[in-house]
Image 1 (tube, helix red, strand yellow):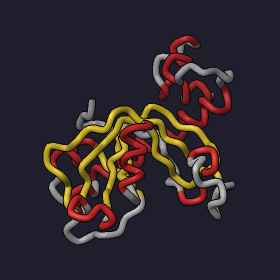
Image 2 (cartoon, rainbow, N blue to C red):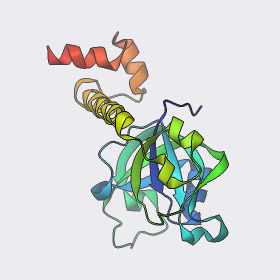
Image 3 (cartoon, one colour):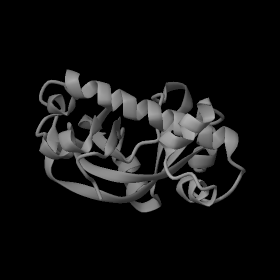
Length: 188
């Protein structure tokens, strides 16, 4: 459930088809070459541009992130094998069910975005995209959280055995109580 401490990646949902993919198939794609540095977040918030008509220029939906993998566009969108970027790598972000925000977050000044980070606190209290920007004092905490996520993901990729189990279960099986302790242990 979305909480004030949730780490959120606001991302562009280019077309209504992409919304249907997220809703029905439970995933979202990000081109590897343009992906933000950290994709291990708690939620994605979807910005719907003008291509959504009357439902455009706002964020109406969020979805919990359940995991991610690297694949090709051709594997993701099998009905478009001849696309110019078919062989390019994409992150496939696995999603939980879409959750509709009580009040959509409107684009007042901004009309074009790709990705930016915010928190659940900002998302829950904002009515415009501009209000999603984390303030200077809290910004340091946001970047620290993002760094910790990136380091934890790197630890998972380099030190844990290959498995279909989630990182949380693997850490529990290995007796690692929290990721910060794991990182401190790694540095010693």
